Image 1 (cartoon, rainbow, N blue to C red):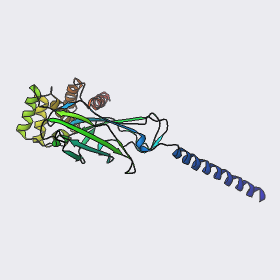
Image 2: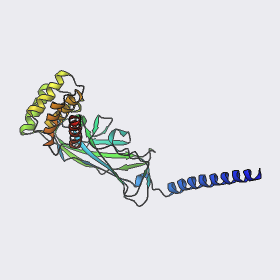
Image 3: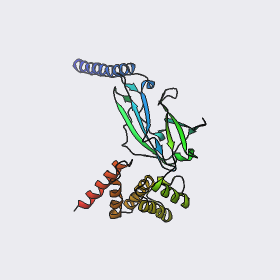
Image 4: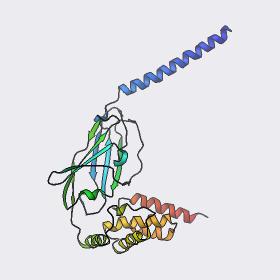
Length: 268
């Protein structure tokens, strides 16, 4: 009986030591962390100029340039509800931008809570209706800040500007076509279940103006629609067109979708 009690006491002692070690380790780890505001938040546009109605592409990066871990989060894409965006025109009129439809052009980042030293998290967001805040051509200034899990914790990115310019040449012809058809402002956010009439507009832009920035997005929508319908031949045709457009923001997804279709073809 005494032997059993001794064993039981020893087990309890070991458990206590293990739990104490874990709790102490967690407390010590948290005590050595730096505040969320010590992170570096960087936002850059894909390029300095965009066309009217063209989706705006922004690259967002969160970096821990310190020598210690930072306790926070890595939800840095725009629709994570942690990112605030403000846009100002050349007259200084400043607008806070609310929720907008976007597409992730990069892989999903891990939702870490403890960000190690020298770690970098990057996402690329494509804004499909941001152009509604650009009623005319000109220069617009962007300001973005990232909030921590506690509202008072913030880290701001350096402001940057983009120019909305008048389209010329083939881009002008494509833009005039869009204006004539009176397509909605979220036109390039089209998904795989678009209606027949709207799908014809996408096809026309993809076929007639595939060499333009507008044509790239229309071709991508058409390719995804064909893929959804399991029309693999036409889906591949559209995707291969985009392969020749190396600067297209969804180039990695184009590659992945083509590989998926080719794997399906090679299956016995």
